[in-house]
Length: 283
Image (cartoon, rainbow, N blue to C red; front, top):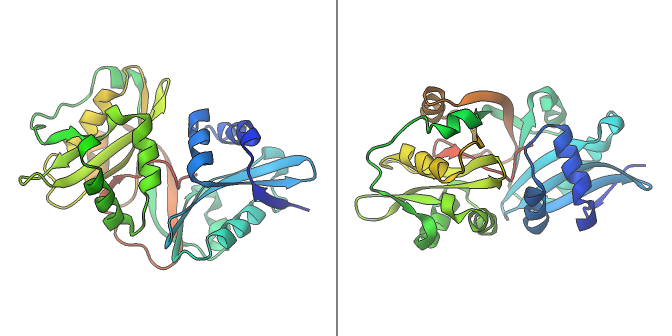
């Protein structure tokens, strides 16, 4: 019989082995962070660990990610057990979101998730990162994020309708040199960007801009420039956000994979202000 419980810290290597199995870029630091700020679950039978997932409970918003079943235990109801426990843990949320791999969309549809649009993972290869593929001249309004935390959290709350402050502070605390804001004419924050990663793999996000944001491209350029050369840079773009996909297409990024944005419960507001999602709900 498949059971589900909280993941133990001693089982993080198992969790990483499963995301490695999928060729996802989760590092051990990613998993340490997820252990601190998410609700990590593991499926098991007797002494055997079978699969994992991570949940974020932001009050009225829930997110599910990193749903992975060990390759030799698939087709045995492990994923279903993980999702049922996940939905039980998030039952107080008005909306629950997940980004589904394209080949398992029907699995989530059978659990009454609704598909709303395809998201794209773009990648800047290390050789392109080294030559900095585009330049932004008018970047005087792009400044370090450190003095603008209240404004960043307020903007994020407006976009997501939920308090994600712990998640954002974890991301910023690891790579503060990659966090920037774009200021309006009156000094108000009109957009922000962060990144996570280590060694030679990084991911941009969250990257959020509001209408009227001057030089939203400069946020990306500033954050990418702060990442070491010879690094791979991923940007996970929700659909439909054509200005971002057009920018990335024209500056050396390649579309590497796709997934379907899905939700359960109340409908989700327009994502046009989200340029890149960042970690937390993909997988």
